[in-house]
Image (tube, rainbow, N blue to C red; front, side):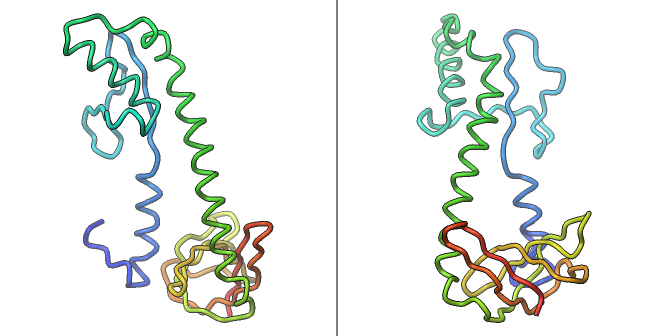
Length: 180
């Protein structure tokens, strides 16, 4: 990934794919025996991540386990009781947080572009829908926005194109381009 140059159109699609591939986290709770598959997917190694307890709920529980083990004390019952449901709770909270963040970004992008509907901008197609190759995502550089693009013909993944802004709706938080 470090060798990719996001200013090169043919690399931009891969940069976006890499960020999506490594985004998110999954959690496996266990008490006693190690899980059947203990490896971190991106690292291909056993891995436990414990950060600031105010940042993520899962870290609050992991920190309590670590504190107890380091002190030679048993892991508190309230922690052990919560562990089986923690992965599902983290998935739900992650979805809510992602939707919230995406909604804010969509609102800002629509607001920045609302007076530019009809303009043609240079962009790079960074994603193409496999089932509907005339739909995808385009990144335009000025202003830096990633948005939906839809045309009549299949989109050229990883290529620079001219894209016309056809919609920037603040109320619906929606931005849409079409190939020019």
